Image (tube, rainbow, N blue to C red; front, side, top):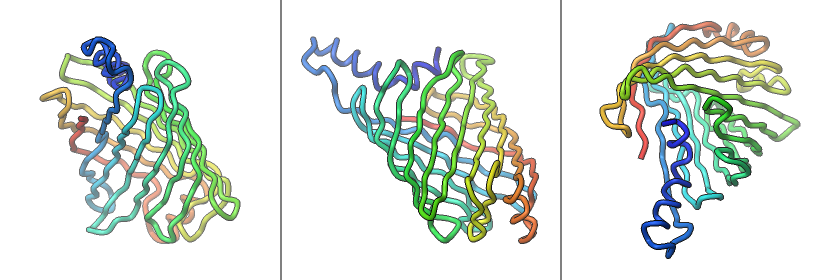
Length: 235
């Protein structure tokens, strides 16, 4: 129930505000930011810093989203992307999203048109799925999902999974066609406040096919188990 309430925060606040105001403000302008991962990882090739955050501003049924994620290793940014999306609610707890994604790292930069959905699947699995269309016939797809197990009201265990697929090889960025990589995570967080929670956990990353071949050429790992510690926050 907590997960559903958090994801539907905009609608909840909008309806509550309208009720308190006696119906004077039916659909106020709202904003929301969630830092899902802000963490250090003890990886095979050395420690790395990873971020994954998103936020929106808008109204109950339509919003502008910004999403960003990336990784720094040895003081260098190895992966970084940002997305700017228009989002429209089409069902309870579900939004359709469209916009633009830019891969800032690795170079050369890649630009993609984005079409996706984000919301809560049955049994309150949080899902973010998107299709990407880039220049020169490039295509990609991504699926992310996570779930929350409430051990206590403040101690929460969160498994998550992410898949990335690409339609063609891109040797310049080290990406192979087909299933490129999979990431599985398990994080245990303690909510000091609902909006502020440190966590520890473990993360497993596996590269496949052509992406794994490109990684081997440069001496990078294709299979890595990482211990993580970080902070999750929202406001």
